[in-house]
Length: 100
Image 1 (cartoon, helix red, strand yellow):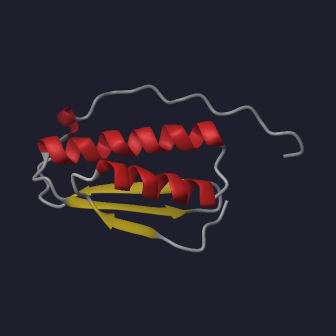
Image 2: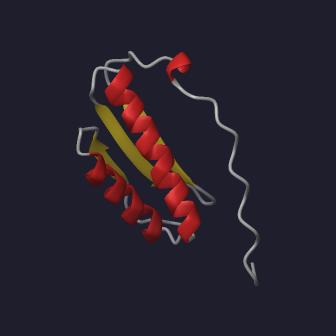
């Protein structure tokens, strides 16, 4: 799972654009369809938290490691606190693909 580029974009109220950028990036890395949807949803929730509880600004950065996609959501004002974040259970890992 490698992507030859790094995604870096400002957090704005154009959530559709941010979702589209993450979706395109994840598909480029060959992430399976349902995992793309899960990633887009998670990023949308995190960005919404920055907009609702932070100062309304920050950045989204996505890059790959040899085995995963890493997405960092940064609240530039530093106002977002752990209590603003909902506790969620990890999604189950997808079943192994044949031949892997």
